[in-house]
Length: 273
Image (cartoon, rainbow, N blue to C red):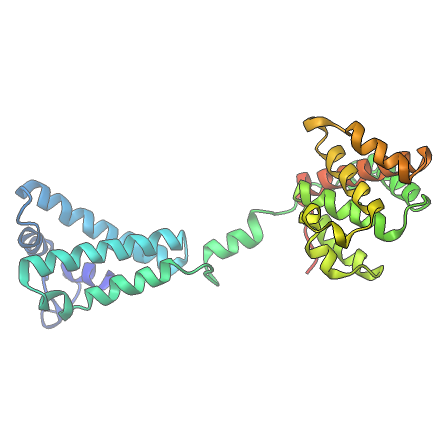
């Protein structure tokens, strides 16, 4: 498309030109849009030229690539149809307009655009790190570490604690904590299959013990505290497996991971690669 624009701006030699200047292109556009009033046909010539500059530049730099590819495909399709109607089916074939439209459509349906501005923006800017609470407010961070130190002394097993941490992090959409605690769980001997299905554990209860089901139910209800809180039904089930001291420990474990989730999400803690 950029070559066609260069042609109508007179940048190519006469031997390599189809129009040679903008006036010739406007006249050609009028033959393609014979059903338009002349003024509208002229506007369409300038609009097409603008889009033929804009879309290729966006594609070259990889900026809004999907949008530019769809736009290019539609624009070339309009050209192909107009040329076919005005000049016969051979006209768009002479300039591979159908092929260009199809190629742009093929590009538009791709999911990833490597080395593009879109990809670099997604990778580096959207989740760029913010402040570091550990250095900005070290006293508060030390208090959080104190809670974490306390959790190392409670009666829950490593696996039970990691299930709580993973499930809360799933609900809070904390990628940093999910990355950390899924790895920790596997390190402690957790079956990866149980991690894979944890988000749908209520549909796969046979994979989890009754105690673990109670832990997960408590985690969900306390994490989503504004929905209905820790229900009486879940609390009574917890009492059938844990004593009051253990229930308090479970609640503190859930509260603590929720706090870590909020720290990680709000400050954009980067995930190690």
